[in-house]
Image 1 (cartoon, helix red, strand yellow):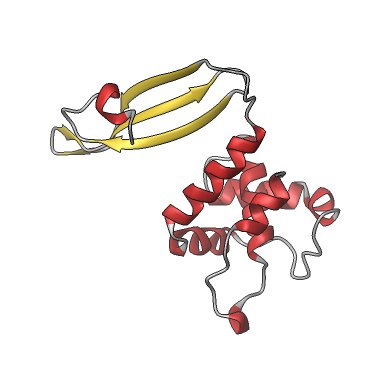
Image 2 (image 1 turned 180 degrees about the vertical axis):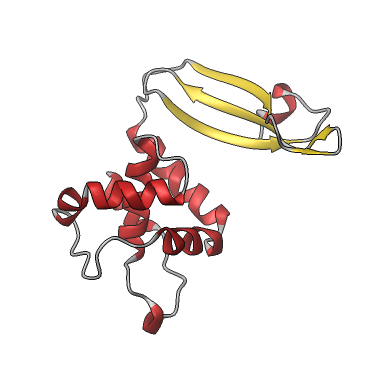
Length: 151
């Protein structure tokens, strides 16, 4: 499965008469932009404009590059479980199946606090052979990597 197959696997939940940009285009541009270091919706839109000729090789983009608001709305309304499931399927196809080295690391997200208490604790699994993050899961404050691994 390549990146276009992944982008096409994401279901389009929007009403047909309101759609100006294909879901596949939105997902493809977003994934490419994030891989290249985009940090927010404005960066993704800017990346799309900078690489528009490249993207037109793969898609029609009849209404040009979507706005940052369009990217934001699309992903804000997308079921995260569906995105995660399809993303995991795609990553499994591109990961080196011969590699057994996966690092598990827990982190508390800086700056995400309510009062003096941190609200985000994440555990990540990273595949060294491919340089790909395989999974991330949010955990409880007193949890650790060992209890998060089964998730």
